[in-house]
Image (cartoon, rainbow, N blue to C red):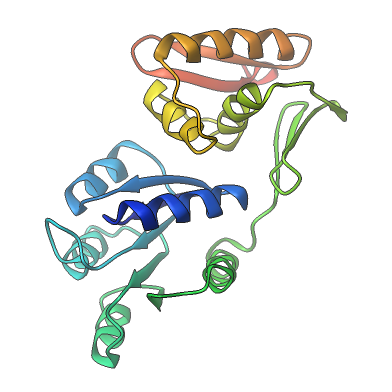
Length: 224
């Protein structure tokens, strides 16, 4: 489940990214409405969490624009504006839920789960690609039912490939994901881990395809 978090507060964005990633979500952060629009055109997302106090535009302005473009993704507003009129305006402009800051993380997660259930019929902690299986709740990756022996960094790289199955992932995206584990890796280091993972999964029906200048794609070789 891919979430676009539109939030310009670095501390809050980092905290939410860590928490939601631990719960099995893949989170991408946009600090401005303009960058969020760019990401929405370039990548696929399942849900948007939107702050209203953005540096380049009002969040409600962005919300109206997205809905006028027939964007059907569920959108949760997460804002410090707690006036009743703001709540009414947010919902009337097309938000699916409205939550005010400060907030409890458990409540946010519960409301995100509820929103996902309403829009998609549920969210599984199990992601499968061919004979590979990622359990985001236990943070384990299995191949044909057997636990893969991976280092922490190898796990993080393969985790992202599985969570973004069917999409080409750039090196910048890998770097952002790995930074959540406290690692800052160069492009060359990412190439090394991709090489190691290819060796781990070579006996199975999945592979990693390289798209020069774009990134990497995990694919089921049986579907080629």
